[in-house]
Image (cartoon, rainbow, N blue to C red; front, side, top):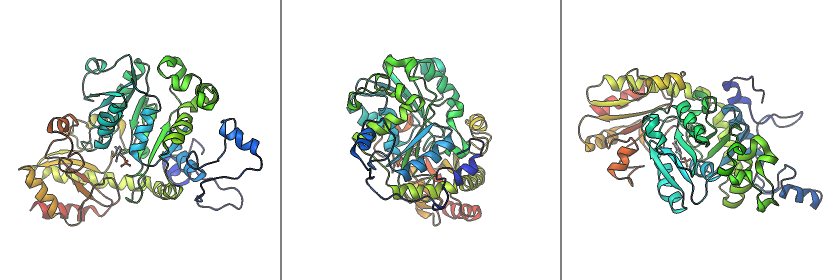
Length: 425
Ligand SMILES: *Cc1c(COP(=O)(O)O)cnc(C)c1O
């Protein structure tokens, strides 16, 4: 869609552009397959000589239209939907890594991504060095190796709410000839567009704010098209040397700026098949149509709740980057001037059991393994999402054992605060 439109307009209108007489609303192409008149045409599709649909595991029009809305919102050249955020982060890294490769990742990342990197990808022979995102450039430099293939971080970390200095990490990655991959799930492109700050690839768990209603699990990968793979051809042979599974095609030569995202589709989706169903993509698109409105309300409500918690003498600490005394306030002002997200990390004075008792007494705010949807909810990472991590790994991931993750919804903020007040009492 026209680049001059503002993000709010893209949320509502990008993607599906009906022609004369076509449905106004994005249709669900609920079909595994697509018909062609002659076999030669089909053969050209298989050889990637022509673009077109032939099997939904590789591409489906509904999915592509929703992906193109997300690409427009993030300012990328292309995007793909995946079955989950986990699949998005796996594909985003594995698309340029293989056995023997190395990744530099910040340690303050989502627990599922931490496990993916530290356990599963390690078994595949891919090593990850976890770094403190607030370390000095000199310290971060030490993490790079000759076999480093990418740098990974989250705009706003889940669950610690640390804000990443994207520009600094992009500079470090580019100095070593590798791309920066940013998981932008919490900020969403409404509040931050990492590509504008130098990120090369952006990923999402669309399960969170993008869907927004806790209805569908999904993910997305956006390619900025900005990384020059050929300038570092020896590091990325998968993109810059002939692919025998497509008759010797070279991705960067055939697809130019869209080489990375095309390979993710033609290779990883073909072979690993973590697709989003067209039905889910349709729901995701409904969520995207109101993303800009919901994000504004999430941020307003979370700011009010964070300020209220900070004034309460039963609360030991609050981490919300919108609070002026947050260590991430300056970064937040730079990267998230219109607000960060609805997620607050805080701790109560008292024991770990006091934290659990407080959560059990909440009435409106529910305990759920979820975050970032319309309904307010809480979670205690040390006893829920991150329970497989040791105390040392918890600390490394920036998670205090008493950390309560409160995801502030879009209800009336007076009711949210009243619920917290009665539970604290
Ligand atoms: C939830 C989440 C993921 C994983 O996404 P799923 O859709 O649950 O697979 C990845 N990154 C972040 C930041 C998340 O919050």
